[in-house]
Length: 267
Ligand SMILES: CC(C)(COP(=O)(O)OP(=O)(O)OC[C@H]1O[C@@H](n2cnc3c(N)ncnc32)[C@H](O)[C@@H]1OP(=O)(O)O)[C@@H](O)C(=O)NCCC(=O)NCCS
Image 1: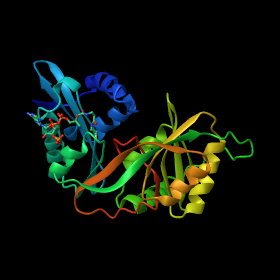
Image 2: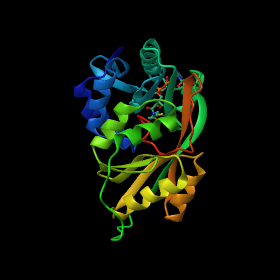
Image 3: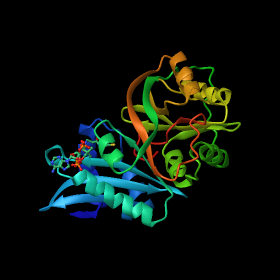
């Protein structure tokens, strides 16, 4: 049966997610449980937890993530029940649009529930340039970040931006921002947004100049400028998911979104 996802579920979820190759950390779940606990659920049978899902609320939209069913319990309808539970929670709190990124295993399930594809999200991998001439001093301007992010996603996502900015460092320029987040696997770039490619490029070089090891980021495939900037810097695509939505058509402008804030699960 469906029960709340609670703090003590976090270590077992992370262990399962690592088996799937997902990048996630405990801070993410602490944030999700604080932001919208009614949309974070677990499927339990006889004291065993067989599946998980999380949801996040923005101002007018929601995001479903972290749908994961243990391999031995798959194809029994648990994934669909968890999705229904999360959707009920988001729709009863009046979210106009619900987003998610779908892995190849998840697309069929989401299509049946009415989700429509709107873009692909490519995982790009590369390296920092550790350029001694680069300006390393981070500069943070929350107001710019919020406005540029809203121009891309058509919604205010202040809570998500605050938590991602808070766990790393960020650069801001004219109508542009770029956040860096540290992970065991390397540095994630994202959220990264800009109204123009030239502004995005300045911040990318500033960020890469301060980094040496592996760098990865999740980028809307429809942002061709981002692809060109990354290709020129010898980044390549390591995987891809489908960005899908349900409900009101969002005012989504992928030319202003250069990288997602999270590794898929929060947008
Ligand atoms: C994707 C995932 C969550 C689906 O969970 P699940 O519990 O297997 O999902 P369901 O059982 O509700 O549905 C999965 C499929 O089984 C089918 N199914 C459901 N009940 C069934 C049953 N009793 N007998 C046979 N098939 C069944 C569904 O019709 C669905 O078919 P589809 O593949 O054509 O869409 C699971 O495969 C998983 O955890 N994968 C790894 C992580 C992942 O990719 N998560 C998604 C991230 S976007």
